[in-house]
Amino acid sequence: MRQIEVSRTLVLDVPRQARAFFEALVADNLDLGRPDEIKLIFGRRIRKDTPGSFATKVVTRGVEVAVNVFYKHSRIKQYLKEGRALRIETVVNSPTDLGCQRRLANLHQLQAKARAANRRLLTIQRVGQGCAIETALLAQISQPSLQEGQRTGALRFGDPRVMALAGALAILLNTVVGFTNRSLRAQVSGLLGGAYSSAQVTYDLRRLRLKGLTRRIEHSNRYVLTAEGVRVVVFYTKLYNRLLGPLLAADRPPAPPDLRDALRVIDRRVDTYVQHARMGIAA
Image (cartoon, rainbow, N blue to C red):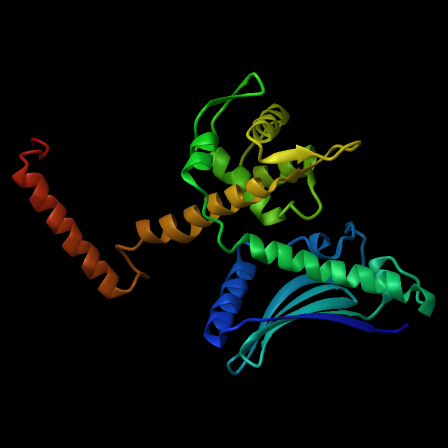
């Protein structure tokens, strides 16, 4: 075998919704869902001496957009076909990239691994869509609680360490292959821009587990996010980076002038209400 291609096509009922869905997927691949560690997609380990290039590229030709994920000699291409079908194509140019031999007898194994890569990509991209969480779950994770007879600390939205923890888990998208104490510590340290001790990561892993956001894989030192854990870390990260950040900076460039004008009108209205209520701060 020199090359095989395994594809999957998801047809949506309404072309307009298909376009909106694909545009959302592209946006997620540019930041939150961008698979910086391609091993999560292809299910293969990548070391410093691993040959080849590993990257994600978004290519635009006219009005057509394609997302390409490269791994060694192979790649996954994703695009919108005929305006209503989401198509994923995994092209394996060297079977050894996925740990298979080249003989035709291994075709079934190679196809299975390529389909698994397609499935992982869909799993990762689906995480970012519809990640809102209900009030009960938000209360459970954002407040101290008693879990399994143990007092568990809160994972408060906005806390720098919690946001770095959520961001690291969202970037790694560990629902696919899991993570270790060591790998999580490295990612959180990078996002915090400072020290993140082994005691801190152990404490955080404990409260993630007791809150029901992670579970440990049996007979290993790896952890995986639960379904609720995936939704929580993506919700925290999207809300912080996609909504609150831009809104808090919307009163100055590069926010559009009409938005800045609208915010000034709101500020004046609020000031008027404060003055009428005699709640202004005395000079």
